[in-house]
Length: 247
Image 1 (tube, rainbow, N blue to C red):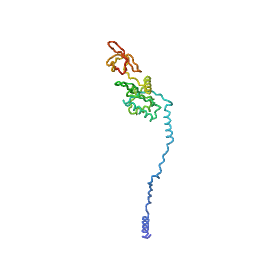
Image 2: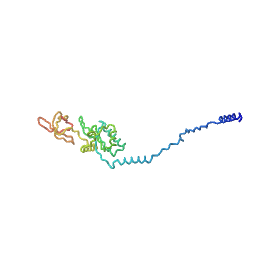
Image 3: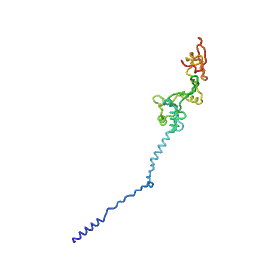
Image 4: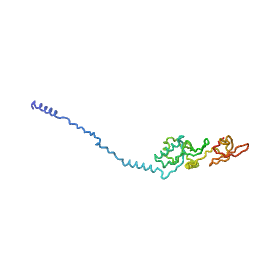
């Protein structure tokens, strides 16, 4: 082999190396149009998850009592002078939560009675709270109804020993129901603060300043018979109940 042949081979290698290049990198095209973005398909719930959810719903429905539930009357301590607004707030809470089955919204009450008062000789009918600082509720206590009570602003707690809600007694309920009916009938009571046998003093009229003992009382008319000593003799005098006061 002549000395020129290696040089020829080297020249060929150099030419080949000069003409060869690394493979070109192809950059991916980016589409900036958001309207053509293909949304990622969400995977449906597995059969096991669906069955589990259905079972939970069925169990919750099965736990709910069928038919009407037993309700009792309870007394709730509330902020004074806010009884009516708090009762209205509780009614709204029960309606929003769908708890009418457990809380009787028609019997969330502020017990009151109408009484007739006389001031400066003028007759005035006023509505007076039976239990200032309290409202009464007819309800069935469970977790949901209890939570609704506790979450209503202005409500303190149920009345009862040791923090345990105590249902009202029959005669207490009767008084509230009777009073509520009387208020609906618009038949005010007379605010008579004394009873037969009490010592009273006449504060208005001919016998003003005299003292005596109450004989009979007519709660319908408001007439009171008072035994007053006149010239040393006990004399029955008929007066309006507002003309006398306790001694």
